[in-house]
Length: 221
Ligand code: C5P
Image 1 (tube, rainbow, N blue to C red):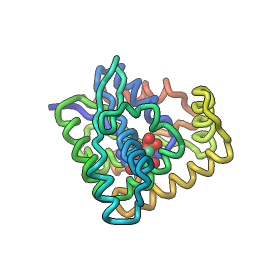
Image 2 (cartoon, rainbow, N blue to C red):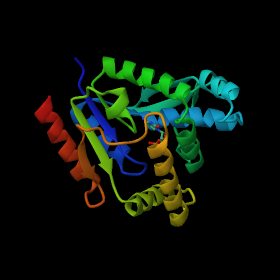
Image 3 (cartoon, protein in one colour):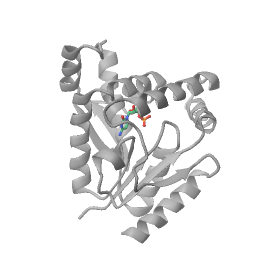
Image 4 (cartoon, protein in one colour):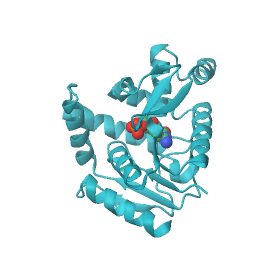
């Protein structure tokens, strides 16, 4: 039986940094489910598809073929054969991902893919609905959060390090908007699973959060 660690939480809480580090320490596969939603969001952006129209929504969901591949130990996401790993990282793609992630056909398609991956591998999977919907029986669930201010500062630094423009106020506003969208949507809203361990990264660094999750995983394995 494969072992699964589900890490959920709002945008910018440090989920991907921590999930990657935990996966590396335990030798598990890291799956960034946000990148999958971002790739479909990119397809909607590239083709200027309306997210409110049933016909274009089904066209977008069916037309976007998303696959994951591990290259040199890192997850790469492909959209119809194109490596979009870098292209999905913009704020625009993140906002679009948040919009299309509220659509039932999109969620059904990606949840199915994620469950298949987790059935075959020991995984650390991060997202919004991993502990509540994708892997409800995961032996370890973590809800990782942090204050809006701490998350915005982190995201700002991350973008600047990559040479992208970043305005702290704008990022804070985007984060609040994305939290609202993710937490209030009708299907699979972001919430802490009842059996998830709550970790707040406002005052903990990535190494401390990683250590805590690794030791919890060793206890439960
Ligand atoms: O985690 P990341 O910021 O890359 O996710 C982008 C968006 O994709 C989120 O704001 C959320 O709306 C959506 N998402 C989701 N379910 C997941 C992962 C991401 O709805 N499991």
